[in-house]
Image (cartoon, rainbow, N blue to C red; front, side, top):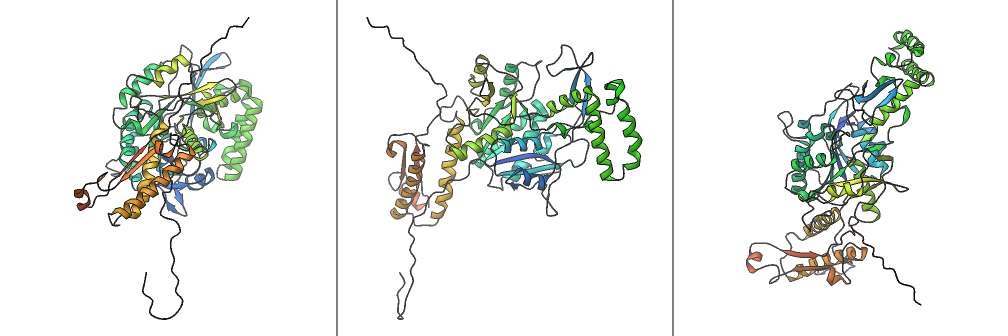
Length: 501
C-alpha cells in the first residue's frame, strides 16, 4: 500500500476474484483445400488461415462450388452398384479427369451437422476453370512453397481439429500424408486429426481397404487422430445445381432421338447471345428446363451425376458432430451414437460382424464405422482413436478432454511467469487449478464420488520440486485426473424366475 502524505481522498482497487482457468475452445476445425477464390476486401486470402463463422461468410470470402464435368460410359462387367439403365444400355457416370473436389460441399456438410467457427486455409483457387488437379505436393512444403499448409497453421493457435477433405480424391495416395498430420497435432499439443478411409466400390473388400490403411498410417502419434468409414450418400447438392453444362459434349447422342429439337433451338440461338451474360444465362436455364420436361433419359443422367456429386468423405460431417457435442454436452462426451444430417446412408452397409474387424484390431488401429439403423438414421458408431491398444488413449473423448485440460491450465499459468517461486504462488496456483477441476468434475468430465477421487494437484518444495529446481527457476506442477470413459459395450443380463406354486 502506498504511503499517503497529502490530505485527501484516495481510491484503492482490490481484486475480488483470484486468477481462474478458462476453458479453451475444443472444436474449431482447420479445413485445408481448394476454393473458387480467396479474397476479402480486395486482399488475397490464399495460404492465409481465415476464421469463418457461417457458410454464408465462407461463400463471401471463398466463393462457389467447383463445377465438375462428368462422363457417361458403358458400365463394366460385372455391373457396379452405381450402374443404371439408359434404354437397353447399362451405363455409369464418373468424374472427368481432375474434376473431383470435395471442399465446398464438405463445408456445407460441416454446417449442416452443427458446425460453427472454423478456419479455412485455401491452398489454391480454381475459379471458372474446367479442371483442378489434386496434388499431394499442394499439402506439403515444396520448392515453390517452402512453408507448407501445416507449417502455416503452426503460427495460428486457433484450430483444434485438422480436416482435409480434398485429399480424399487421391484415394490411397492420401495415406502417406496422414503421418505428417499426426506429427503436427502431437507437436502442437492442442489438435486432433479427422481422417477418411479411401472411397472404393464393391470390387474391393472392406477388410482389404482397412488393412491397406493400417499398413500405411505408421505407428507414431496415433492417439492424435481418428479415422472414419465408409463414405456418405448425402443430399447436400440440390437437384438443379447440375445441368447439361456439367455433362459431356456427346450428350445429344445419349438421349432419345425425338429430343433433338431442344438442342437445335439452343445451338441456333447460342451465337447471338454468348456475349450477353444475362441473355446467355436465361437461354441456358430455358434449355435445361426444356430437356427436363422432354427427356426422361436426361433426368436419369442428371440424377446419377448428382448422386455421385453427393457422395462425400465423412470427415467434415464428423467435425460438425464434434462441434455440436462439445457445445451441448462437453468434450468429454464421446462424439458417437449421433445421427448425421443431410445424409441418406453410408455407401456401404456394415453389419455387427463386419464392424468387429474395424473397431478392434490386433494392431490397435481402430477404424470408426458409420452405420445405418432402421428408424434411427445414419449414426456415427465408433468412438476410438487409432491408438486402440493404449488403455490411456484409445478413446477420442479422453484424448481430446486431456488436450482441453492441458491447454486450459497452460494458458492460465502463464500469468505466473516471473512471479516469486514461493509458497504463496504455489498456493494460488493449486487453488486456481483445483477450482477449475472441481467445475469439470461437477459437469461430469471426471469420475469420482468426491473431488478427492477425481483429481489431485501437487506443487511445492518436497512434493514436485527440489531445491535445485527452484535454483534453476523451474516451477513444476503435478496433476492427476480420473477420466470418464464411454460405455462402449453395454451388457444386459436376463434371468427368468420360475413361477412360485
